[in-house]
Image (tube, rainbow, N blue to C red; front, side, top):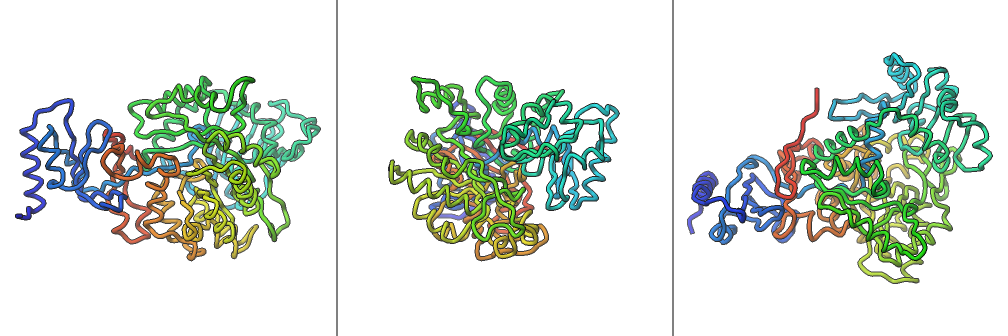
Length: 574
């Protein structure tokens, strides 16, 4: 058989396409410089044929010939100088939460934030934090308008109390949300505006220091509604548009929101529908409600409530049969629960669910066949979550489970082995190692444990499926940055921490494609480029497998194809 050069081949394909008349059954054949399928049985291709929202064939002109002979088709050479990759999957991202923090608040974080409107420069120390805070507050003519800011972290910016904020302004209400969003600090003007007095301490809730204006973890419930009432102009719809832009520019075509799904019919739900459930939205959103939102009326069951929620499902916005639980506290605030030797300074972590209550809280969902997601950050928390799984498996055996430990910040080798034996899955935030590795080495836990944060290599060696997520707004929606982080184990300073816990490039890329799809029970639909699957692609300038590993994070994302429709990425404003 004569071998055709690529230019002649493309000319022939183009000529043949001109003779085909357009019909409703027409195929679109995308030609790319290279197609990386993430399907090990056929890892590479140069053409993919799409009908409506599905892939019908992948390969070359020769292998697509039976389809082209039988159907009308058109050739699309938009990507002939680009690489097609399966659409990236972010299995843990909070759209509404991110909209609130990134849009409602002034961002003052230790690290830079790249937004569609430009880059917000980080402030790495206390002096620069307060300089930025005073500067932003002075820019508003209305001194009575509440001021919201997000990003303070004591390990960079020092302790923060009501008195510190009163020195910035005694008249303007100031609400500071900690970088992890697991703590807020209010000045006196904010406390007075919200009518929050010293009597709140009589409730004996953990996480309350009224005198200092601090409310953290469980204590935030005291001020949450009052803070929301301070928001005079509800701009969360604009915030969701910002979040959608970030998701798209990251090359993501599927996200999952475990734990912050709004109630159907609420204002938050209506805003989410309006922004995320349109033909202009180039990704699908899977919703996994928080366990505490699943209260059921007498005579109904968890399945009844789940089925009512799914009645509103569409192709872009859908509830899935899963639920989110919370074990211990936040990574950014060092509220995660650590086993011996604990924290260097002797402080204790926080429980979001008391250890003795976690398994009983999970059990009804486990028995009803729900997939289980558990927020857990410290090794003591990991012990509790794995103990719960062990008990559940013995009392009510289940097969093909998705019992997902979300974040998995600090862990031990024995826990990785146990997770493998029990069939647990781990979804990690690769960004934590990059941002926190150096700081946690110096403060809180020491170099030995900081070097082995996000212990993924040992997990994979013990048969645990690993995925990577952004946890936006805790980290940016940049899957290739997460891949680079867990492969190189480099921190923001360039220090390599715990190289033994690195993933290979292939393992990391699977963690944002086919393995992430498996964790969501959608690997039959997404995660690789194969016949019958959704036509979801990310369009890259370069093949991640063909560049130096340090260049992977900087590969340009042209845009995406979502269910067969091309969506060029919006650019960042200068």
